Every structure is written in C-alpha cells, then in structure tokens.
Amino acid sequence: MGSEWHPIFLTTEISPGVWEMQNQTDYAPFGKIELRRIDERTARYRVTLSGGVIGWSTTLQVACERLYEARLEQRRRAVGGAPNKSL
View 1 (cartoon, rainbow, N blue to C red):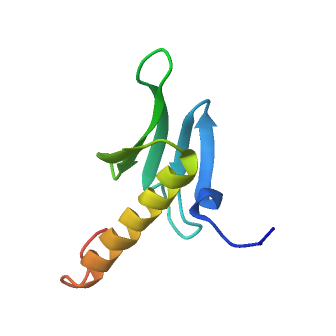
View 2 (cartoon, one colour):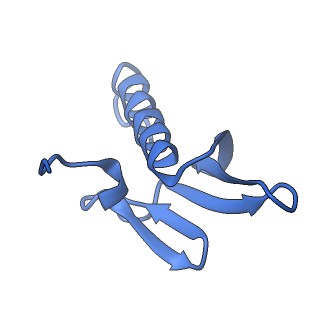
View 3 (tube, rainbow, N blue to C red):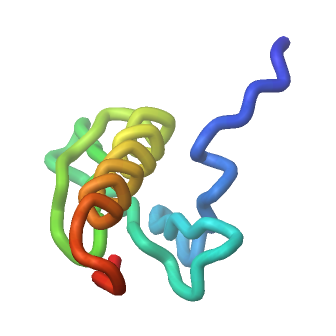
C-alpha cells in the first residue's frame, strides 16, 4: 500500500451522502459532492464547483478527483487574469 495523497482527504461529510471540499487555507468550501439516487438500482455522485454543476461520477474517488482538478483549473484561469480578481 502506498501513502500517496488524494483529494478525498480534503472532503468532510457534512451529512449522510453529502461531502464538501475545502483546502486548509480556504475560508469556505469550494465544492460539494452529493450522492443521488437515479433509479432503484443506480446512484451517482453530483459534483458542483462554486455552486455550478460540473458533472456526475460513479464513484466518490473519481468525483473528488474531478472536483479538485476543476478547482485547480479555476485558479489557473484566475491567476492569468487581472490582479485582485476574486476566485
């Protein structure tokens, strides 16, 4: 077993089936993952960044990876913009 870091370590389950993701240096969570039932046998993870849906996933692990990558991309775009631009 490796001891690699994974973005799932940034999540906190705030209620059953609902996770928020927040960096240690952030004042508030930047994203949310919610377990949703699609039908009797199917469930999916709904992934939101800054309140907007960015996609769906079949596992919590992949949902965390997608949310973290979307946050990194959001920050990259903001850094390339004007000074003092809010994230």
